View 1: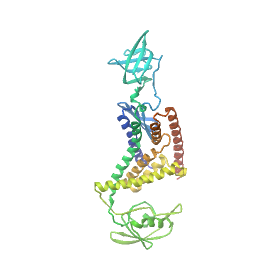
View 2: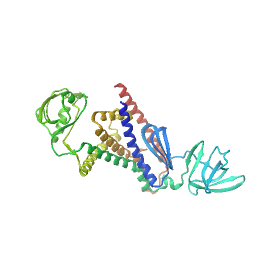
View 3: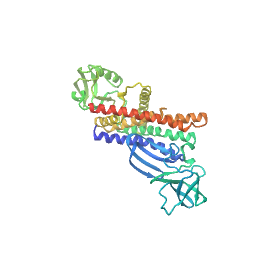
View 4: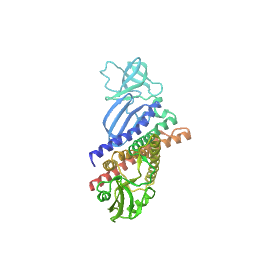
Length: 422
């Protein structure tokens, strides 16, 4: 694992997770929901800053992110009847409610709460030396305690107060932005590598360093003419792949065209778990695309990636995958560095596109704590015309989150064990 791989993975992670959470954030704000926090990562804060009503934070563990909306979880600070507080007023409305450290403030009214409603009527009543006084509360008033502040959330600013349609759009926006990002990255990739010319010529697009192909003298852009006397082009490329896999440690005679000259080389596929591997990627001649052909090719590539992502997710949720085949942040970092070092920037962009698409598909799975689960609960609410008990829904998501954390610990352990084992 290299520093370059770590930095490239961090960049990819911040882009993919950031755009996902921005989708939730943007549509929540558009629906009028108070967004308390926009977080990348989980765990202790590394860095944070506040803009308008939202605190943007970067947290220690890079395993996801979240947008915390008012009404979705218990508030950190609150005031209750019978509590002594200090009120700061501006234009005859309460803008600050001090739960402590108000004794020596000269800009506060100090009294005991006899009635308070910070969700509907937005009023607070205080007993000031035996006299009752009622004050209107500003809809963006802050509750202050131990130098921590929490903005109040009137009912119409809470997630649960919005229509099922607006809440569903807010949740779906995360995966949707991952799909949009994937397509945008594939457009960049397509314009970097080009689109097929339509010729059937089979080219060597990339060669892995120190591979059998590299050692035999094959080069990028060589045209594969024949292998072991059999002619090959893009129509029977699969047959060539099968031939290579079936020939570990067996010499193969390759004829390639380089600078219009036929060159014969002996290639011996390396034995990798019983399969032959030469270390090349193959394809057909490419040309610089126009806008229409670039969009079309990107759409085709994304469609193929989408099918592959669905198959991978299906195997994951049906437990048709071995635990040691799963990878966490460590393995992703390792593979990202290898892709960039071996194949270059274009393949790194393509990998980022696939990862964004895969994350979008995975998040739509109706597993507790994922967006798909929340959409399922909203669908049930729409059918039965009343919401599910929030405490029960939160319990389901909490269990799901705990399960994901256990899985993440296990795959990270496997990654580290594999890494140090060499």
